[in-house]
Amino acid sequence: MIKLKPVEYGTIKGLEIYTCSRCINDSFFDSWAISWATTEKKELEETKQTFNLTDKNVEEIQVWADKKLDEEKLGWINTFSDLKTLTEYKEKFFPNDADFEILSISFPETELNKTLDLIKPTESNSGEIGIYNKLKSKEIDLEKNEFLGYDIIGIEISGDFHSFHCNDLSSDLKDKFGLKINEFGLFEKIENWNEIKEFLSDPMNAEEVPWFYVKVNRIKI
Image (tube, rainbow, N blue to C red):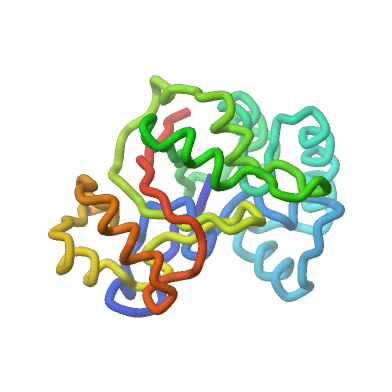
């Protein structure tokens, strides 16, 4: 669940991008919502202002979120296990906020096993990130989904992820691979994925993380 905000840099300055990456948009559920996570004071104050929250609101959210994490209804980071949990969160803590979008991402079935191998925990003391947990269940798209387009994301070991927009690569990808971007700031379709992935794997072009293409879906509740 995100709040869209205009991009502040590059060739896409001023545009709203329908990406789940919190590098670009504000997430209603983030690390500040977890009691044991470290959040800088400045970041917390900005979050409270963005979502019109008080200290008491934050504390109530943390109590709820800690419990849901224990129940495996939430995943690290920004991941809800199901629509019921997300709806409960929205209605309980943001009942009057109409400025939001509920977006989900889904990976191509042909890339699923490869994706799981690339993002599975590599250390015995590392927990499973939310995206990995969701992919393990191999759920199909929800019926309420509205397909918006394709994003290209790079996943960090922490579970956070970038969009290709974080590196302002839209012009490069359009020019080099003939991709077209729609009104949501997403690609209409993805072709020549292996060539695109090779381009992104160059550290001169993007972060040195595994890159994937995903469907972005809008969910209505």
